[in-house]
Image 1 (tube, rainbow, N blue to C red):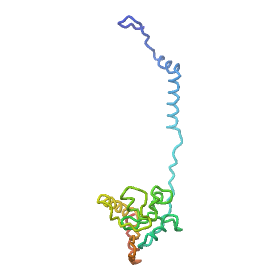
Image 2 (cartoon, rainbow, N blue to C red):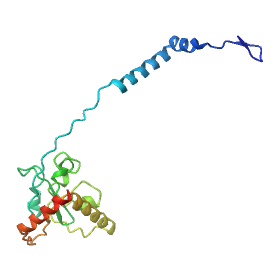
Image 3 (cartoon, rainbow, N blue to C red):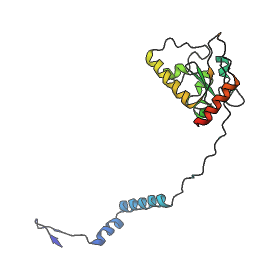
Image 4 (cartoon, rainbow, N blue to C red):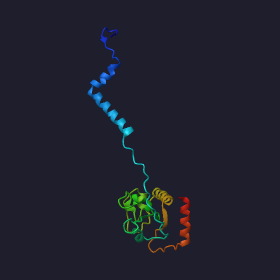
Length: 191
C-alpha cells in the first residue's frame, strides 16, 4: 500500500485490477461486447457485391429535326413507344433519354419531359408555366437569362441536340441525312 501526504491510504490496482474493473461492471461488459461485435462486422461481415452493373443499351440518336410544342409533348417518356425523353432549353431541343432517371416518369424533373423547361430552369422551379403556349421569355431578367444560357451549355455538353423549338408559324429547317451522319461520327469520337 502506498501512503499519500494526507495520511489516507489508497490501494494501487495491480495489473489484474483493470480486468477486474471491466468484468465486474455491467456497463463496461456491454461496451466491450459492442466493440467485439463491431470488429467482427468490420472484418467478417458481408462484403458488398462488386459485380458490374449491366449497361442498358443506348438508343441510336434521334434524327435531327425541329419540333413544335405539340410534337415535343410526344417525347415525355410515356407517349412514344421507344420511351424517349426530350426537353427544350432556350429554343433548342435535346434528347435527354440517357438521363431518364432524372427527366423520365417518376424522376425529380419529370415535369420538364416533353416540354420547354427554360422558364423552370431560369427560376429554379420544376413547375412548368405556359406549358401549352410558346414562351418568349421576354419577362425574364438578365440574371435569369444568364442562368438559362448556363443550363443550355450544360445540356449541349451532356445530351444530343435534336433541333430547334419552333415558334408558332415558324417553318422547320430541312436537315440533310449527311449532316446527321457527320454529327453521329463526331459523337463517336467524343465518347
